[in-house]
Length: 168
Image (cartoon, rainbow, N blue to C red):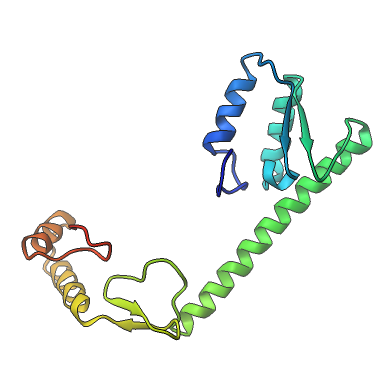
């Protein structure tokens, strides 16, 4: 299980463990997943990983996209891999464009706002006056050629904390 992990790479703890277990002559002979996008969203990795499991005589079974091991099933599997790859890259492009537009409008794009800012009820970034003092000090340290460690030591010695409430 790789909950909330991207399928755009195979560097997922559960996936890597499954591959490792598969190489040790397991008692199981199939990998079952919801659909092929849960297996992989990168066409080249999907083909590579499919070959890996095929060489070990381990079937790949999609619950919602059942395919056999015929030539037609092989073709459809690769077609689905290509569609998943395209969908993932297209979705990333649209997400990036949407975030860029929000940022250009001065709107918050999600997550913790940057140090020196808060988010108002309209999702706009607004200056946090107390944190702005810290941000100004950081810029002053940069202008004075302080190292990152020197800057952190100065901020910590004055009792300032990060946005997360932790020392710098």
